[in-house]
Structures are given as C-alpha cells and as structure tokens.
Figure 1 (tube, rainbow, N blue to C red):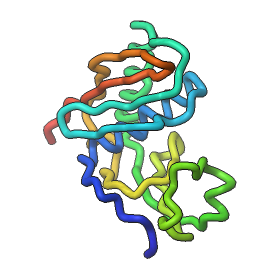
Figure 2 (cartoon, rainbow, N blue to C red):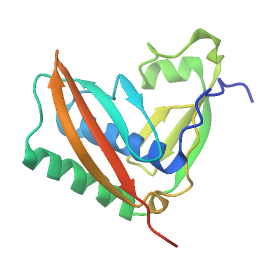
Figure 3 (tube, helix red, strand yellow):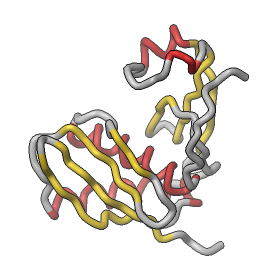
Length: 153
C-alpha cells in the first residue's frame, strides 16, 4: 500500500483522542480541525484558528461530548481512497505531494473521518477519560491542552 508513513510515533490512544477532539471542535464551533498539534503520552495540545478563548461552560461541553464518543466504544478503522476522491471530501492543503495517490482515511464510527498516517487504537473505549488541562488564546490562535486518564482493563 502506498501512503506516507508518519515519521512521528504518536501514542495511539492520545492520537485517537485528538481526532475526536478535532471532530468535536469542528461540529460545535465550525472552526475546522487543528492546524497544529503536538501529541504526547502525558499531555497534548491542539491549535485552532479562532476569535477568542473558550469559556468554562464550553470546556465542559467539549469534554462531555468527547467522553460520550469514547464511551460509545466506536470502531476505529482505516480505509484507502484515491487522491481524486479525497479532494472531494477533505482539505488537502497540508498533505505532502509525496503522499501519493492512495491516501489513508481514519474513521471513528460515523463520528469523524480524516486523512492520517499515524497510529491509532481499534476502539474508542481503549482511550480512557478525556480531560482539558488548560486553554489559551493569543494572535487568533486557540490552544487546547489535554490529557487522557487511561482505563485499566
């Protein structure tokens, strides 16, 4: 299969939580996905083009929605589509040309879909509890710092 291997080895549960956060942010605020993200095992951050900081009530709403999706135990699957098909569904502006013509899509149930080359878990229930640690706003950038408290199986 031809697709661009991600040089970063993101922690799969945190990386999958980032996808759910991105889908949630876009659904609630219409702001699109994060334009920049730093994913680590202990704490991660996503940056969004935005016009203000978010309120405590909005933080609570985001956390509740992300955790609702996690608890649904949705399957996390990959599929491959052509670059032409991807142009109709996704913003390809950040996709490197060397990604090829066969692109990997990660689907989280029917909640979220995006192009991605990183590692993921197989089910949202494997993520654990999502928590926003802090937010900040500067120069039209909203930064959300978050962590997950993994469940012990």
